[in-house]
Image (tube, rainbow, N blue to C red; front, side, top):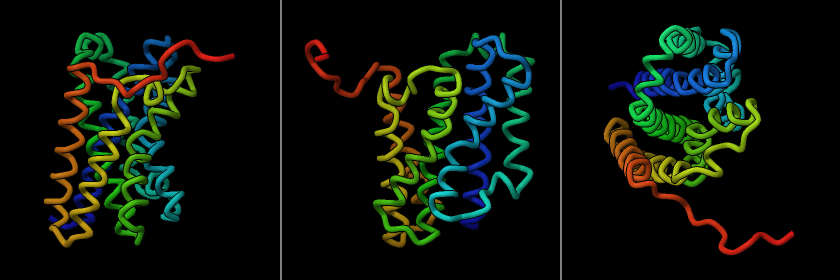
Length: 208
């Protein structure tokens, strides 16, 4: 598959999946249809927007390709109309979110590598792409970003991005590198989700 087409597909699918999760947060906060679309768009596009600005891929893809704007709008409207059914699929939404995380960490890392970044900064850009939209969404609704207080989330994204970039840098076909990075992130995140794995926290009372 053409690398450019692969990146586009990964980006659009990841945007749609993340936008669904953002739209659900808006519905649960009792926001109107505009609020649902804003949170869906922020969640779906925030990470990629930040990545593009940081790697100087300007203007960001979301501002020059209508498909990047259409994906979160469609996801937001789907959530607004079908949120009762989506809400009953809470466990499945967590799975969809894990797929979005895996898609975005790979797409972000490979795009950064394609723009000439080294393996380490490219992997970091993959992680930023995967977690940036969710962090922006949580801040907009006034809560501590889940990535800072929940289960393992950023670490699987960084690991998947590192695998994808490592394969790309070693000359492995882009599709193979992408699948490997995707699988590492997805499996790790799903295990963390179902086994309730968490990053270590400080022990004892906090000092004032």
